[in-house]
Image (cartoon, rainbow, N blue to C red; front, side, top):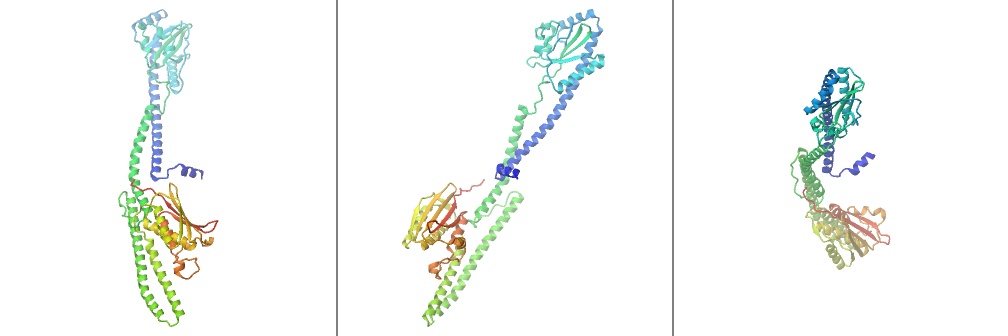
Length: 489
């Protein structure tokens, strides 16, 4: 449950946003896996090359040591002086009276591999166990008994072959005791400048390449997702507008197979709904037309009755039946809102309705004002007219309060009537329901006004609620959404 709540809170609400998040996670996971595999292979290759290089270097050092061990002691210094004067040697070799201290540097698998290879080969080829293998920085390396620095030696001695500025790779130093008081000193470059720099899995180059790949993939994915979700957005917009306009143009039946099939099904549903509504209107019109003839005949026969009381009762019943037929037909026609939404001045509409009702003896006060609203003007006018007529009929005086927010427009209509019992508040929206006790349709109406008003409000995405005011009277609240114009994505 906690995971679901977290995902619901942080995941984007749109399908396009969720696709983008999935693509980001997928690309990052794929890059992480590929980099992990690649880095493992690169590291294994580097260790393999370092193993081969250190083995060859150890063999060369072993050959050098064998050569010096084979020389007579009195000739060793002569040979070393000749080698230094020649310059350009691969090794710096000296014979010292003691072991020269070295500031050993480095750590990790690379150093352990090199040190173990050198020790193993020298031990195996020279049959000695006291070989000292260390690494030193060029600027701190000391080479003679007096611990003179490598950089202080004369250039003609060839020490420049160990000083590769500005790279300054570490120098491998091997020391072993040839005889008591005689240590052979060999210093050489391994040939790998960054052996102790450490392996950086996420270097600047890899990070730049990863970001570039991520941007390219996301850009292409966004374009693809946008083209895929555009038909879905059109379908969603059409579904929202279907209740407002059944005569809107059909959707384009294009795009992927699933989207095209959905658009076809939606268009077929729209056609069937429109056909059913048209058939309903034709049915009620036919019923109304067919009932007019027998009602007229019955009225003529009622007028021929001798008893005036019976004649009046028959005529009243026929009037009631005629009003019911007219109300049913008006209800059907009133629910078919065949007009385009336009920006409508709600303030002017309320004032015009209030002026008409004042001429009929009603009193309406208007408080506040709102900005123009995109609605179907004739439908909203009928909705407001039904609400105001109901308020004036029962309360004779009504106060209309207009207010708005960034998302909704609210009209509160408070009358001075007797109100409605709480259990009857929802029932009055049903067709042909009248709470007025009179049997006359001229005094109590047909019971369709509030139902039509509610349908119109909901067709615009709004609603109507009824509540009894604490100080008396009934408050009808009409709420309409202030929707921004919908454009193609």
